[in-house]
Image (cartoon, rainbow, N blue to C red; front, top):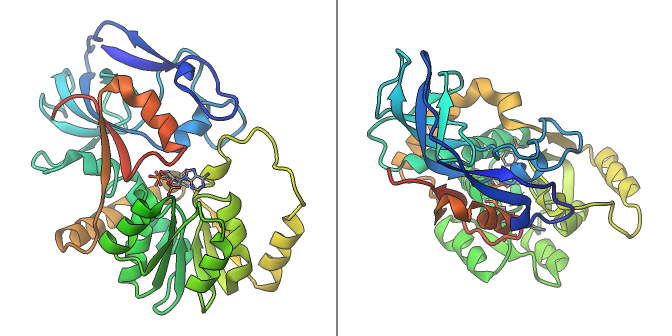
Length: 337
Ligand code: NDP
């Protein structure tokens, strides 16, 4: 039984040295418990927050403890009446081969599901984040302009496609020509801009001749700087993430733009709202799941997974996620399904 523990807290960008791969005995379930084998592990940006002990909405991973994470797992042994050997579950095993569970917080997956890893992506937490953030906070209307940051990623790809289904003009922002091509040609966004371009501001302005009505914020930094002057009156900004700042150790140098931001929010009557998906919307997961399942069956929503094989490769894959090295929903295949 292998597990990846947090060896030390990163200062700035995490490196492989912040993690340690350990071997332990496979645990034995007691009465009322099940033994789970991890098949797929989801790697997500929020894990960077758990590596730090700065105050946040959730407690940090302790030094020496197994890294946390959502998983698709198979029941290997069961001493619990509600679970049988072979059941496929959505669980929270973290970065390890095996884990014990007592049945709480587990979701049974359809045993005939063609691609169980989708429960960690388009049909799981990232898809749910896109759906609620856009529809509940963003309130997109047909004909409006929606701008989506981190557009080729797990959340952004779904945001833009739902925006198209709602009749918006959808402008993506992603890192590099290959991701931008995918966003327009495969996902059907109207246009996608490479945030590495020197003239990001000018390109975004040209792509949004009617201004921006909804900005789905996942990045911050220079992407938000380019968006701010283009916001229309009564624009909505679901604040989902700010990945460009997760490795910051201090406020950036440069002029204080807080006044500019609050003046824009005030004079343009902008609604800017943060959300933590399961805390705020957990009760609506069923609604999302049914709708997304239907869209997938109808071919209305496309997805891309970036699957890396081997638990031992999780640290490197995770540090790459914060640098844009992933292309699609990042998942570790821990064992074969
Ligand atoms: P992605 O699959 O989109 O992967 C992260 C991407 O972020 C990278 O591929 C990279 O894409 C982009 N990125 C990284 N650093 C920068 C940077 N400095 N500037 C611009 N882009 C950058 O991840 P997810 O879809 O899983 O998550 C997207 C966002 O949503 C994150 O901010 C995450 O924290 C947030 N989130 C929030 C939730 C909530 O409940 N509020 C729930 C789930 C996710 P590129 O190469 O295109 O730059």
